[in-house]
Length: 176
Image (tube, rainbow, N blue to C red; front, side):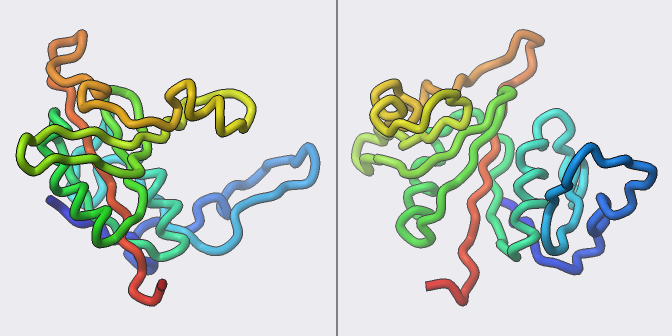
């Protein structure tokens, strides 16, 4: 397990949007408030080219509010991570992000049987498009308990292993 630090003053490029020149607004611009660091592929000694876009986006977002995260890298069977996720939800309680195979999802909880190893994950799927109706979202499975098979394991069409990665936000010490 690796831990990535999302705190300010980390030596990364800060507020690159302020350097954009020669842009003619079409209307009123609304943009980010405050400072942020720019995170992108292959930073912090991690070769995430091809899979790290969602994580790097989250790093940029969280960096603006100073959130640290734990990071579980390169696994292909989420059931092997159920116990670790259960500890996370018991101790920290923040949602986690899982990504791989060109997709990302939010995990809100885990149902894990210590005796049998059986597990399910409470998934909030960001790919939903439609009206904000809790009944539609829950009845159609956009927010639902999923078996580990929800995330494919094995190899992709190109013969490469399908690996997943998890970002576990850690709450700042001064919260709650």
